[in-house]
Length: 98
Image (cartoon, rainbow, N blue to C red; front, side, top):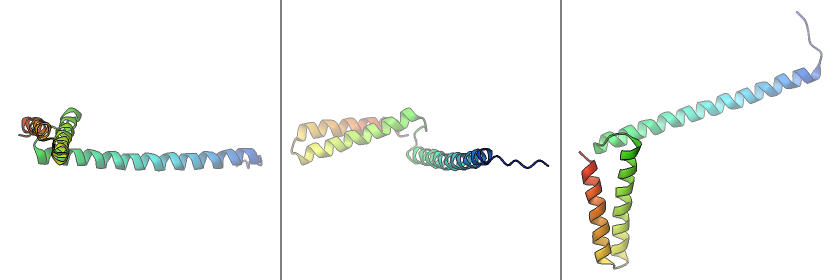
């Protein structure tokens, strides 16, 4: 077995090992986050009875935002605008939810 005495090769190997450890750790973290977000979206869509596609989830978020706009319009005493936003949001959510 040949023993290498070059300190720069040892330093490069140590640095490469450190970088590999960091990359493997980040890959593990992002894999865990991906699994958690996927499970959340599937549970959320199953509870609402909608498809778990990104478009369906985006429309659910849009419908909730329209309802929020309706309530904020009611708070600012703009009742006609509040009714319109609220009805639009409820219409969108009722068309999505089975």
